[in-house]
Image 1 (cartoon, helix red, strand yellow):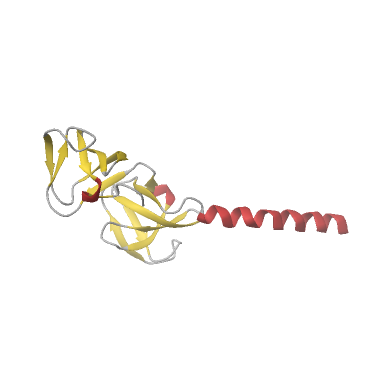
Image 2 (cartoon, rainbow, N blue to C red):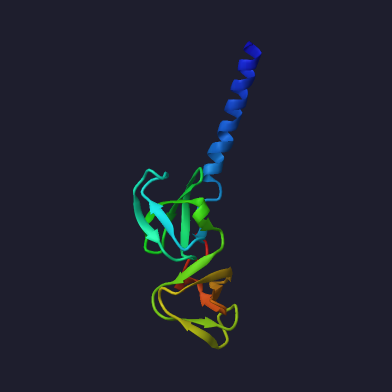
Length: 155
């Protein structure tokens, strides 16, 4: 009987560091909304009040903390709240900030301007190198200056 209790306690304590480690590993990281509607709540649970509802798929967000299936996120405007992970995807997205920016032909920012995109435009973010990122807005592809896109570069 005592050996069963000791074995149970040993297993229980062995699992605690792994759970704590999962909560902080890899944070922060980029995600985007996976559904047309996603609720941001004031706490990590359905009993918490909704403080914002995103009504567009692909909105870029930064994950700041993980708690079970909930993610504490920050949006491009600086709003923070909790969203269920099932409403998020690891697909990188970005939103143009500031003024109109040009999507350039080459990955180093050289070449002609292929497209001009304005503030608030959301697109898919690809690889980023030397301050320039691949940016795809509904099939219109080019390279945008990383500093012009929230969601590009390191989170």
